[in-house]
Image (cartoon, rainbow, N blue to C red):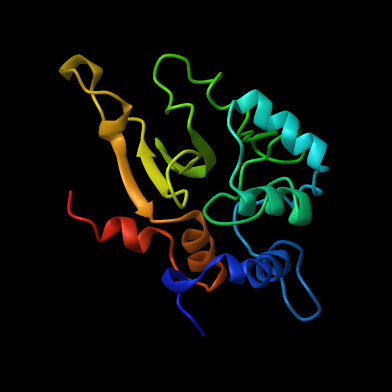
Length: 189
C-alpha cells in the first residue's frame, strides 16, 4: 500500500470508496465511531454544491466536491466529522445545529479565518481544521482562534499551522487509520 504522501488524483476513486465505507459502513464494517450523528447527511446534488460555492465566493477542490456529491453532506470524517455545506439539524444531539461550512464565517465576525480557508471540522476548544481554496494542492491548515493577538499587530495567519500539504493526503491519513494530528504536532512551534 502506498502511504498518504504519495497518493495522487489517480487514487481518488479508491479514497472515495474507503471514505464511503467509513461513513456508511459495509457488510462486516461498522461506520467510523466518534462524536458523529447516527449516519452522515445524504449527498448533495451538484447544483447545491455550486450554490454553496457561490455563497463562499470560491470553488471547492474537485475531491471535496466529489465527497459532498458522492458520499454525503458531512457528518463523517476526521475529528468531529466534516462540516456540511447546507444547514443541518440533529435534534437528538447535545448540540442540534451541525457545523455548516458556508455559515461559519458569518458566525465569527471580526476574528474569523480568511474567506479562502474552507472550514472542514472543529479540532477542539478554539482549534479548527481548514483547507485552502486558493493554494496549490489545497493544503490543510490547523487554525487556533486563540493563537494570535490583534493587540500585538498580529492577524489570523499567526494562529495558523500547516497540517498536511494537501487535502488528499490529510483524508488518506485518516482513511488509512492514521492520526491527522501527527504531522502538525511534529512541527516545531
